[in-house]
Image 1: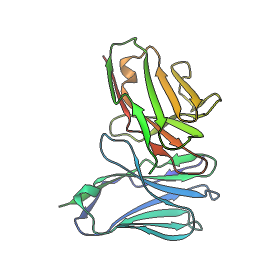
Image 2 (image 1 turned 90 degrees about the horizontal axis):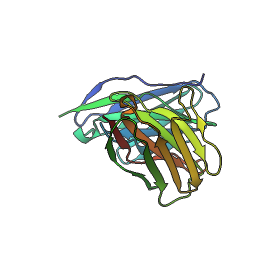
Image 3 (image 1 turned 120 degrees about the horizontal axis):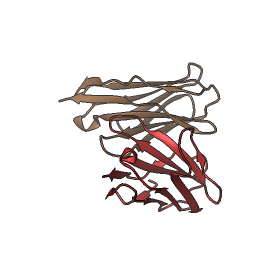
Image 4 (image 1 turned 135 degrees about the vertical axis):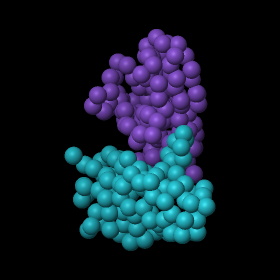
Length: 108
Length: 114
């Protein structure tokens, strides 16, 4: 069975530091990778997508993909209290599979 | 970015009522729409996947006669919770995608059955 694994957390990071969120997946043929942010009581919001090995930067967010090692990560620079949320990793080949999410808590 | 509208945002009704939730893609044609359910402090649970003009594919353990899905056009899918009971109370979220593009989520519907 295809799986997407994330540490449930909570991950506590001081304000201004770098938050690092990791995700591993089981299906080697997966082609598309996404990070979503979900605030408590709200629906998920797409923040990054990545399709090829390496880094992809968008503002304070950097997604990193390593297909050989089957992991994808999300770095958040200069963490802000407003970044406190659950971050969902999603992986797609023929269907999209979500991880259970990592709760991130930015300490003011 | 892509916009998915979900309506209503909140429903409170009596046990035995049927409730319809609408999901619309406003600025793109969604080839596939997804319906999720999420209980408090738990992860998203995919209920079903629907493609325009064809029957929905339900995940294991989801009763298709209980949760009726209609995807009549490329911009509209509906989920009807038939004869809802208190255990159906949850946060229902739809999402839509076009081709290989990422899914975009609606704002969700909080369903409370008394």
